[in-house]
Image (tube, rainbow, N blue to C red):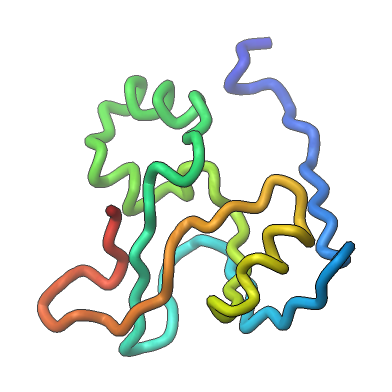
Length: 115
């Protein structure tokens, strides 16, 4: 079976804190939208984009900007916590990374900014 069609094992994420209690503001399935007036600054260097996205982009001739607008690029679940709880959140979840920050939306600019 070609690698892109091979069934993928589900990923299990343990959210039970080990050494800290973290109050999550919300969890987000990355599909778009979000509260009016808010946006996010996303650090594209915070994680490795899985190779499948390069393959899909090549096969479909999808330009980079559209890839980042349409696909989750390997980030499927985001848990938003106060900055003061970031260290605890990183300790609580294996392989957790900080991918960005919530910010006020900027007039006449995209709500999601990639840095």
